[in-house]
Figure 1 (cartoon, one colour):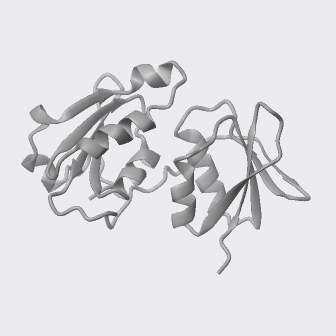
Figure 2 (cartoon, helix red, strand yellow):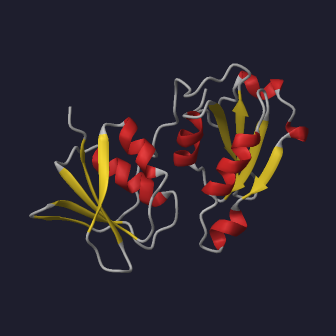
Figure 3 (cartoon, helix red, strand yellow):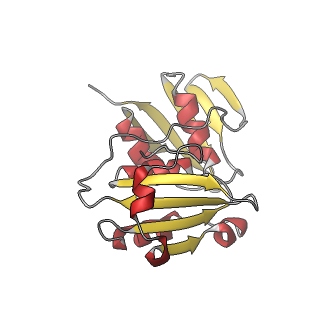
Length: 189
C-alpha cells in the first residue's frame, strides 16, 4: 500500500533487494534551500520493474509519495533513530500508471497567513520549506473556497497534477516581481 507507515510494513518490502536500490539523500539539498524533486523524478524514471529507490529525507515527503504513486510506485516511510526519514519507493512489476491508494495528507496543515479579500481567500506560503506549501494549499482547498489566491515564492510545478486530480485548476495572475501568485478555482464541468 502506498500510504504505509512504520506500524505496518508492506509485504512487497520483503520481496525487494534494498542492496541494489538507488540511494539518494536529499537532506543536503533541502538544507541548502533547494528542491530535490526534479532529481528524484529523474532517478524514479530509471527504476526498473520490481526495482526500488530509497530516499533519506528530513521529513516524510507525503506530496512526493503521492506524486510517485501516480507513476505506479508504492511507498513506505519510516523514521530512523537519528530523526531522519527513510522512504522506500517500489515500482511493481505490473505497474501501469497510478496506484489505487495514496498516502493521506498530514492532519495539521502548516500555519500560514490566510485572509479574505474581494477576489477570494488568500494564502501566503512564501518562506516555508517543502512540502509545507503544498500541504497548506491542499488542506485549505479541502474547505472548498470559491477561489484561493496563493502567494508563493516559486512556481509549484508538483502542485498542478494534485490540483487537477482533485478537480481544481490554477492560473498565474499579476504579482510583484519577487512572487508567484496563483488563482485556484474549481474546474469547469
